[in-house]
Image (cartoon, rainbow, N blue to C red; front, top):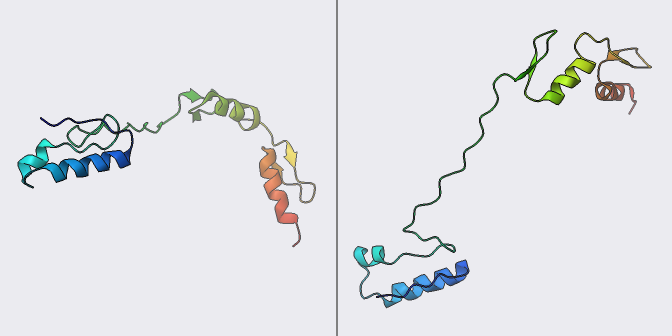
Length: 118
């Protein structure tokens, strides 16, 4: 009977497989099937691979809804942002050049780039 040792690295696994293949009398399929090739520590070609990790499903429709307009959000902080800055709220941020108003400061900052001369 063959004495199989678990290798500590892939290189050692390959060397062990080469030695086992060289020591076999014939290259028949029955001999090859009887000799498992170690791949990683604790795994071999004869053991089935682990099942793939399940991907989370995308959220269809949020669980946090606005009582005023009915918009729904997946996270509570998104609903809070909507209530504070968007739903029924007049825009707070105004462009000093063209007086365009925005509900979010970052949108005003992006808009201000249109006034820069290159």
